[in-house]
Length: 172
View (cartoon, rainbow, N blue to C red):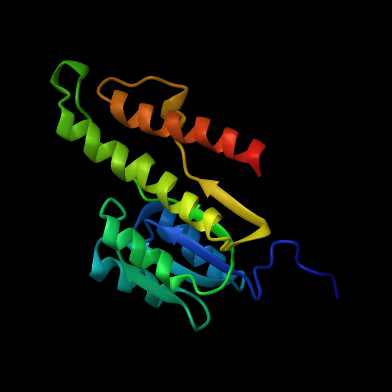
């Protein structure tokens, strides 16, 4: 019998933004592959729906807004042992033409899409909660390469993730 190179059996994976879209799909697929999941999201009802769709048992969910320091700390506190992978899928988009952008919009999109990921991975790495051979995945967007009207702040937030991940890879 051949080993499955995609098996996550006995591995713990954290997925942010697991209440919908790519985060939800990633959490479900990782659990299907045997992963022990830690999932986060802002919406309790949608997070419970995702939890109910996970394969296997022993998964953990934590309702958290990663832009709130205490919620970020709560997510970190759930990580009792080293994790094998983390998927940063939390993200929002607001379609607003450049001439109508305001500071609140910039802060909201960058805090959610970019800065919360930076803060969480820094905490995980500082406290040595990541396996040396673990995987760190940032969900970016094609919008970083292909411009779309009204999408400047979202594209910039994802572009920042791309640059950050390249430097992180060099440092690891």
